[in-house]
Length: 414
Image 1 (cartoon, rainbow, N blue to C red):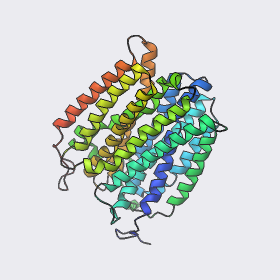
Image 2: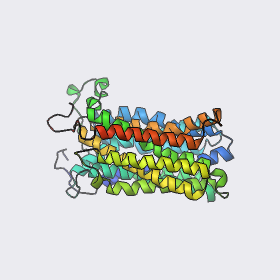
Image 3: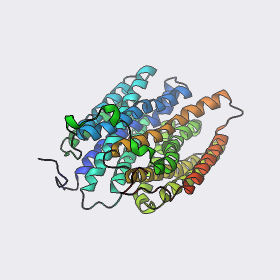
Image 4: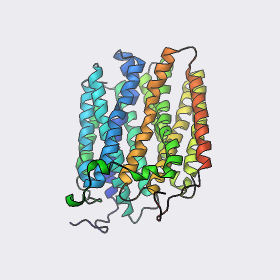
């Protein structure tokens, strides 16, 4: 079968790639509700546990920045197909390293590598397959990619939390389930056709030249996407890592289950708002980004309230609102990226965007270190109020640039 724009117009192909994105996202987030378990039952400090959470960013960012452009060079299939195997290897390491920080750290890095590949390459593959789908509307590729990731994040956290709280082998069973999912998704993707033909060897530039992403200097990207991106997982990490840790002693004896519930609630809310994100967003202004930042201001204030009263109801409300902010920021950021990027740097610019979003996962470790060093002066309620103020400043900045530097076919990089 030759690769042409008309090849394989069956509409279900994108779902198979989305299943791979789902699997790597599951592996990336199944660890999150278990943070409380590793801290309470395995003797790790809060800072160490939050460092494990951040560890997979060490895998994500290089994978994003290298594998996105690499897939523009050699095609989507050869880069994306190994992702589920790498994710499974990460889960195997974590399952057998519950009491060893180095092994846990290494497993989390592998989970990050797999997720980075899935986000940059899988997302581009889904977008290109959606472009061939006669039933797909504008923005369908970004929405499908974002929802696939969010579904994996949510179900991975929910299932892992339930199994760790109530099933046998709390440090093993969730990861065994994930390995099975990775095997199934990996096999499913093998039947999906290539959408990005490899550049002939004689026409290839140096890989280092391909790693440069000209669209990253687009003013729309710098002034709208960059201020928004870190809030994606900054909000998510507060909802399902920081707040559950604060609530551990108020969980009625079920800290892992409460952590899982907050993760699922936050990500479920994010998933739901992504379904309507296309209708909210518009190519003529940064409406989606502004609504996302508005939700995040409110969510951070609710987090400050929850950290003050320490009730389960307050924590769940804050997690749900922050989850809405996460979901809206993710899908609107992706839609901005897909409008800005040209066909030759879609995966690369997507990689840059996701790399910026994952800076937000440094938040829990930073907050733990600050509150341990200065427990009287720096408290979580004060920190969250400060976060709301910062989100408000970002809103003002994006609002001032909302209708400026709109991408056009005639000028992608001006």
